[in-house]
Length: 235
Image (cartoon, rainbow, N blue to C red; front, side):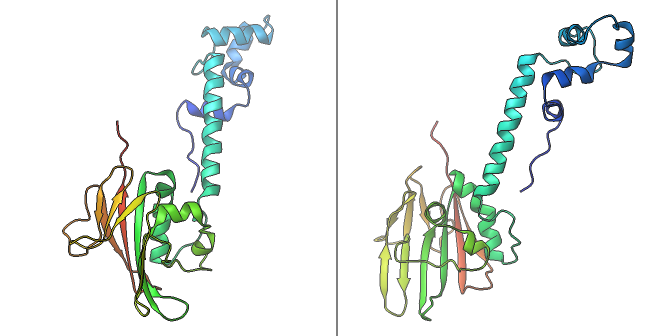
């Protein structure tokens, strides 16, 4: 993820290291000609007051405030880039690309995605299940997944898990979702933040309010479907 380049007046605080450097940039050769009798501190005062100068005038307090804000923004973006496991990875697999597109939103809490996966485990047994992506991101290192060293598969500890050979079935609540297993409409998940219901029945006309259903053409899996739920803060 590339850092955004400051625009407009914000260029000022990134271009100059100190306020004095900024004031110096505002002094023209004509200013020096007429003000040669002044020492530079006096010229700086004239520029700061807006009497002389060739560009935008900023008070010292405003310059320092913008400087601090620009530095905080830079550090925040750098920290985010280090946090995202998908950052800097060359992703060719459609499923990994889909996960990368959702990683930041799931880490920040803007979205809580549920991933349905159907495939075979290391023993060749067919398994399927629903994974709380945001919860897995917080409890597991996803670097091996984005580098292709591991495959993301459902586990008995996930939201829902089913082993088709052994007929083993489990369901577990997560910090984001409550599982509603005994329901005529099939498996349902209730978001704990806004209490909205996500219906994962493929025959349902919609998965629910603020939710979308996206089938993914994953090359390395039998079936993948992602349910994205956008959470809204109470006002």
